Image (cartoon, rainbow, N blue to C red):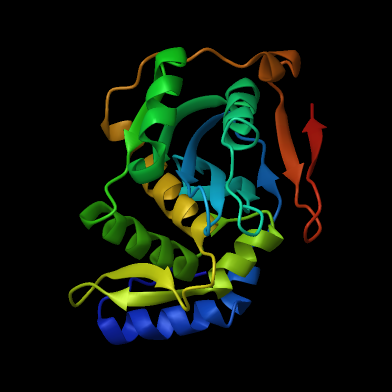
Length: 242
């Protein structure tokens, strides 16, 4: 697909209209390489909204960003989420599966959780992602990636649903902020993807401490591997390529 930059608000609105038609997103579903170095994006809520964790990797040669895993938790009606039961165990699991370079998160609900985790994983860059200017940059870049084809995803049903719940709000002449189409719609996994994709694309510009290779990767002998795309709503499988 040709790399086509969005340069005007009319282009942005047209591009987002195409995204809401979802066909453009569906074209980006493909086999995703089993990535070692990843960044996690986390958008959280205790009640009302969802909590989402998205794992992304990146090919530094082609600039292709890969959505590797998406996890979403929804609070029960009238209830709240307990991060100790859902989000935190999944973050620990990701730390075991991958060499996690960083965690980009919305600090509003997650300051204490991420501060505690950062003391446990001192080699991981825990980044409180600004929800103003930098979110505008990351949301705009995500839309550009979808339009240019520089993002590949696993076909996550919940991520697809959240994209269909999303709309674009203009920010200046050449930028957007991803917002809900309606108050009762969830877009949390899209926000998490936006933060993680932006962070990993700019990660090499910051000092990186050495990271241990996870035991799961060492056990595979460092071989190339591919993550088979899951069926809608299903789990993924891994195929090792010697």
